[in-house]
Length: 177
Image 1 (tube, one colour):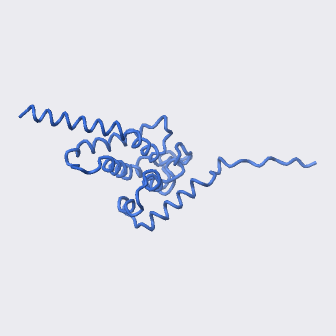
Image 2: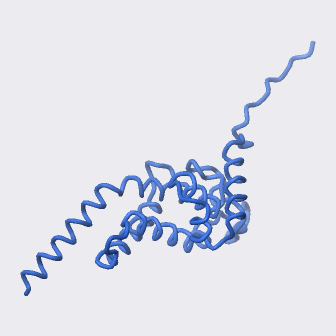
Image 3: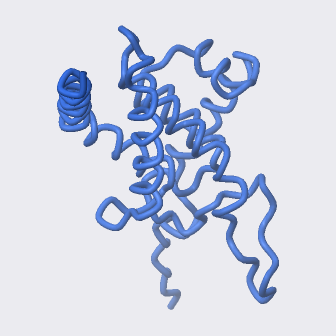
């Protein structure tokens, strides 16, 4: 009996390790996009991915034919959505202990590719554009109407396409004689 249980656990661990070897890179990239951290230094993204993979491992036997990648992605998105609003709000200049409002970008300096977006915008952009999830599925996952998801995604895309004020090229001064 113990041998069968040990063999089953070994097989489970091997299946999970194989899944992680194939999916961890893409999932880590999604986590880096969500946290808006620089690619080389991303401790929050790594913690986020570790939490999602831990939950997937805990539910591995119950997945039974479900896609483990989708389950892990859902865990990643849910954990990010739950934690983003309280942990990553910037300090207001000159006001120690006071943070910017929830609607302000959590990383205004643009540490990552999506740093100019709010956490909600990043979540929707990552799920819609990076992961390619249908609008209706994203809406169900984040608890918003599909029309609102479409509007947020459009606004976030426009923000990303625009030139940030600090990166706008300066016009050369014209010398008048």
